[in-house]
Image 1: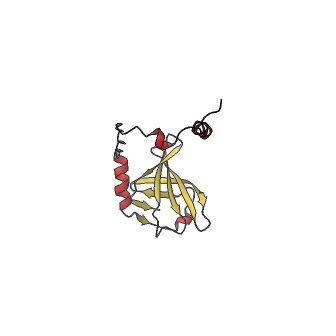
Image 2: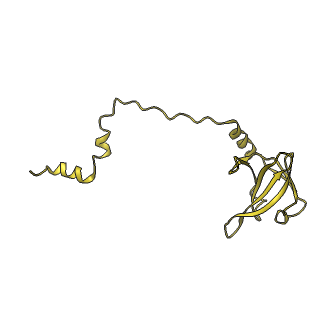
Image 3: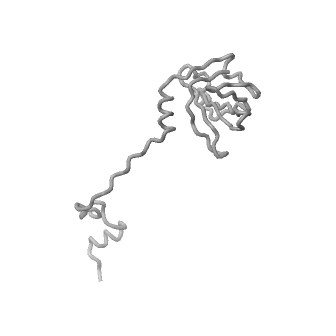
Length: 142
């Protein structure tokens, strides 16, 4: 026996249209998407991002090398390495990898070459030995 034309089209398309699938849902009440709670550190980050970072340089940032000391807010950190994260052809995204000898914590100060006047550096802390988390920073010195 031959299938009806409509039934044959449904079989070939793999189902019914979205309109047909949800045609009888007038009585259905969908749950609202819960509003995301803003965690404390996110609020701190938003406030810190709104403020301009104070930078005090004793030499150009490109001259920072392993063994140098940098100060982020009240933390005195030792530079372990300076690496290129990404080369954007016009500028490079750099990371100054550093550590706090007192607490044995690792950090990164990220910046774009030749862009400190228009883009603030960012400060990250290494957590769980594999993930860097952005932290607020008000003052950077070297």
